[in-house]
Image (cartoon, rainbow, N blue to C red; front, side, top):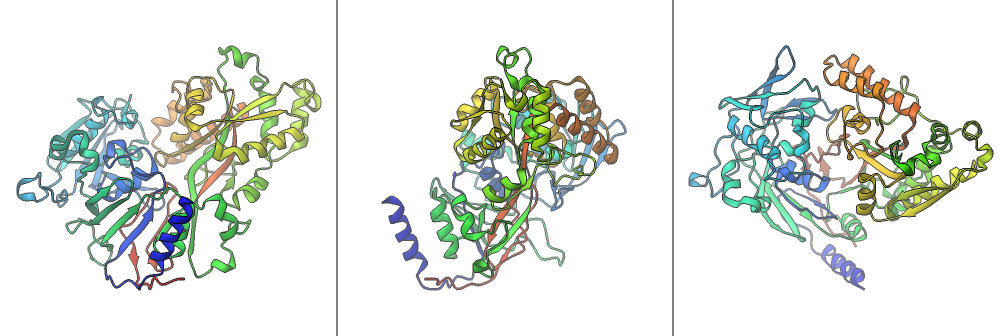
Length: 543
């Protein structure tokens, strides 16, 4: 009944008179809501997207995920690769705020960078991003303002992906005065230097950001960015209502397509159906996210010792039993790519299908491996329990059915995500659903999942291979990209040989965009980039 009421309200609103506003307002919905606008808590996509509009970082990824200047115009790296010196823009100002003298935003300087990055590491902040500098930077000595326009970062040892880490929204630069005034309430009183500034936020209802008239960037023709006048974010928790609003032209874009709408909008090959051509734009690109199943590999765990999944050939047989292409076609309408080239997903520069060859669908080889493991046709093989979450149940059942066909009995147990995360963190899950979304655009972020000195997360499988660890540590200080990529590929091949995971598919960014939206681009980190977006006038009068 509640859903019907929402639909009626939406339809009535959508059938009104044409919009007469000449303002360009970009509208999108966040189903899960936004918990904070404090960048120290930018741990999920909803918060990252909003924070990205309000703040800047020293550096940022471009559309191809190369690191480019943002607040820093350039940087120098010392010969030992442990000291990075950033030269800052001198024309960046924080948003106007009553906390500043006269209400006018002051200039952003190097001491603001020191303050912002130290704050992430401060236990009092309790930032979920505190890990980004752990073991890499000394909190007191690692951040230094040489003068107002020069910031220096000192590493404890070389760490090539540090620029990627500095591009994360956790590393947004903030003014201490606002935090001092509001304390923990800074989460709802944001103030940055980004292309948009805070207007109002009614939690659970809407968040509105206005164009920052003092933003420092211009386009290639010298015109000030951004072009949009405002961004409006709604928080409807119904995907059905969100899709209806989009169809009515009241949202400018949707992130991803709910499973219940995929067959209506997409063909089995992931293309737009003819009925929708011209009515919306389907925007797709590789997404730095891999979906997989993991095995607990801790040999000291008594449950592992007595599990058939502790046998390498059984794990390999499981990997060769799955038709990943068929799974993508029928369960995902062609969205994504079969994970047949290792754990590191496509979209990263080190990804190379000619060098890293993963598991193909080969049930004959799977049966052969089972026989070599002592379980011909699966005889005598105990049932393996696969732990999954509700939204992943179809994939788990699909895999269980495929394994059954070669003689591997699997029982699927579905539980809430929080419980599964707890069990994997405590080494209580022997075979479990997992996914890894890139924090920054470097394969190291994925290979860290298997580094034995890392806890869970990220090393949920407790994988331990000294040869892998040696290569991983070597890669951290290798500054020649080509050589480092070779090390990454060697590590990925080691993981494939040991089979602590079952890679399923590399994800894909899927956006639905209104035809009158211009300049909207996607990237493999699925960052919401609105600086170059324009909205052409459109009559909203669809019945």
